[in-house]
Every structure is written in C-alpha cells, then in structure tokens.
Picture 1 (cartoon, rainbow over the protein chains, first blue to last red):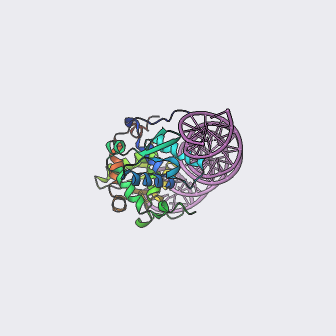
Picture 2 (cartoon, rainbow over the protein chains, first blue to last red):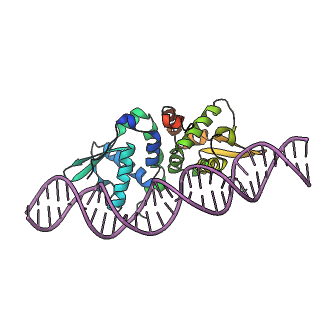
Picture 3 (cartoon, rainbow over the protein chains, first blue to last red):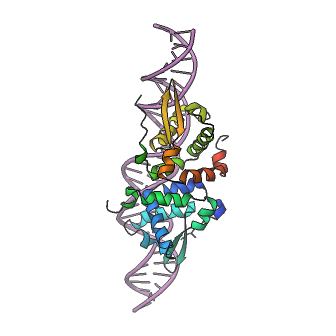
Length: 115
Length: 115
DNA sequence: AGTAATGTTCGCGTACACACGAACAAACGA
DNA sequence: TCGTTTGTTCGTGTGTACGCGAACATTACT
C-alpha cells in the first residue's frame, strides 16, 4: 500500500480544492468532518461515508487528500481523517467557511443519501 | 441560436459554481471580469479571452453562464458579460471574494496564457 | 443584396471522472 | 497461524469535459 501522500500546505492549490469540493458527495464528507471537528474528533473513513461501496469511497478519499482538503493517516487498521482547516484558512481565508455555509442550505448536498 | 439561459439567483447551486471555478481558464476569466467590474464596464466575450479558439471559449462561456457565475446578453452583434457578483454574494457570502484573493496568488491561473 | 464581425453549434478525438466487484495488503485478535 | 477488519488497488464500463476546425446564425455596415 503506497504511503498516503498529504501535500504540504504551501502546495495546496485553489483550483484543486474547488474541484474536490464541487462533487456533492465530497462536499457532504467535508460537512460531516466539520461537524466532527467541533467535537475535537478524528474520524475513520468507513465512519464518514458508510453508504457507498468501498472502492468508490476510496476514490473520493484520494481526491480530497491529494487536493489538500483532508489529511489522512493510518491508525492501527483504520485510516483516520480530519479536515485541514488551519491550512485551508491560512492559504484561502474565508473560502472554506463560506462554502460550508452554502452547502448547509443545499438540499442536493444534504440528501445524497437516500437515492 | 437558442436564447441564452441565465439562471435566476435562487437556482444557483454551490456545487455548480465550484465546478465552474475549478478550471484555471475559467478562473482567469472571472479574475478579468472582476477587474473590469471595478471600472463599471461590461465586457464582450472576445475581449476577455482572445487567446483561445472561439469554439473552446464558447464552451467555457456556457459553463460559466449556466452555473450562474456570469451573466451573458446580446448587444448588437457582440455578447456582453458581467460577473454576477451581487447574486453570488447574496447566496454565498465571502466565497467569491475568497476565491478571487486565492486566485490572485496562483501562478498557474495567472500564466495560462503563454503555453 | 453582399460582406464582415462575433459567437454558437456540430462533429470528432482524447482524456479523465466516477461507479462497481474482485483481488490484494496491512494490522489486529483469538 | 488463521481469520476478521479496514481500505487500497486493479480492471472494466459508462458518461462527460475539453480541445479544435468547419459550418451556421445573427447583427451591422455599405
């Protein structure tokens, strides 16, 4: 299993972040991570997105990780995730908060589960 | 030529906006429109993106227009564009400004022209 | 009417996104 | 060591994005 590549903060690019967040499922993931974040918790992959097949989910983890939106690291046999809020806020002030607020009002993002 | 469909403000969706802005060329367009906007000018299509073939440019106008990022309307034999800043700021406060600030620092966005 | 200017639309090719099941890899526990 | 848990990787199929040239449409000018 290739080592998980989490890009350094200065390499995070706005176009990659926007592309990552433009997919409703990934935006939902980020919403859920933001909610967990408020409780100071890290979260395992399977816990965040239990509705989707593992291979599809893994594809989305990769996009989120390589764009710099989330950080992913191994803990035992699970992979833990957290939102890279500090890095994102430092590089792109206001963007993440604005998008999260917008996503909270978007029914298409909220109700992906249930198709 | 089918009438240009500019979606009403309440139909603008955050995922569509993010997808539109995730392409470096379209982000460059938005930067240029924002600059013209400060001078109170509307801009014609050919004026904003003279480096690219017409058909490719037209493809990007459509993405930007249908996502609600820009408004496009005919004036004589030209099509004028403007950034829908008021609508975007109302629906997604802070997002556009944050992205524009981020784009200003991204060399990949700035130097598309010259490939 | 005839011509020029400005974009759109069509058709095509290439590349990549996204969905899945099957197979593989790593870590833990009995 | 053997089986379970947790994700990744591989292979496949389908759809869509993006680039271009050629053709068309609309408006304006003469």
